[in-house]
Amino acid sequence: MLTDLIFRKIDEPWAVERMRQIYSETMSSLATHPIPERGPISQQEWWKSLDQSKVQAFLYAPINRPWEFIAFSIVQKKHEHFTTPIFAITPKEHGKGYGEQILRHYLFVANGPLAGEDSLSNPAIAHLNDRNGWQVLGIDEKGVRKLYHPGYRDLSEEQQQVAYDEIVRYHGYGKEN
Ligand SMILES: CC(C)(COP(=O)(O)OP(=O)(O)OC[C@H]1O[C@@H](n2cnc3c(N)ncnc32)[C@H](O)[C@@H]1OP(=O)(O)O)[C@@H](O)C(=O)NCCC(=O)NCCS
Image 1 (cartoon, rainbow, N blue to C red):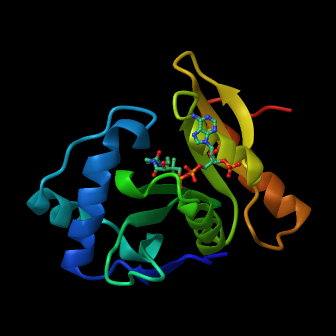
Image 2 (image 1 turned 60 degrees about the vertical axis):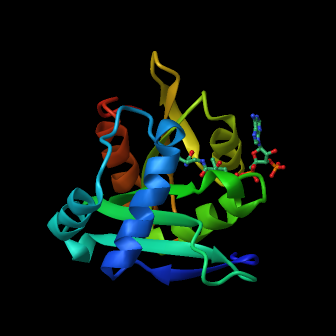
């Protein structure tokens, strides 16, 4: 899964700050809707405000530069039956194949169904999502794709259906099919 990267849990203020720096550098392509700029203090406050039992976050470094953290991922359990992921790589490290490795790592960390979004204006992530099992439930007028992933977990068909229905509702499509 991670062949070129090592990872460590985000559990200390310096790691929370490193996540903020990468977030700031990638904000324009990271989000599918406007997201707030964060300073160092508000970043720490935001982190403390999260229910830590529902958050798993990691920094990543190239295996041959283990001191240099170049990416983060965060998986949040926002609903009973699914999680939502975000990840980003610092711009100078784009195009090296790290994105897919981190994507597969967060799918593993999520340990079950996920809801997500990507944007047609960010073809690299759409390409990686399509190749790694994300399914498109719909596309809005801004070109934002509403996504579902069954996750890496051996759930019963009934459990998967419950999660799927909840994700469809989360994306605002109501109970369908
Ligand atoms: C999007 C992101 C994760 C991609 O990671 P990356 O390691 O730079 O990805 P790569 O450049 O190695 O490219 C991944 C794939 O997309 C393809 N790709 C890149 N740009 C593309 C484009 N404009 N059109 C189509 N495909 C494209 C690459 O060819 C590659 O495909 P391949 O593996 O089949 O060769 C990274 O650029 C990033 O962190 N961006 C900012 C934050 C973000 O967008 N996060 C995701 C949303 S949560």
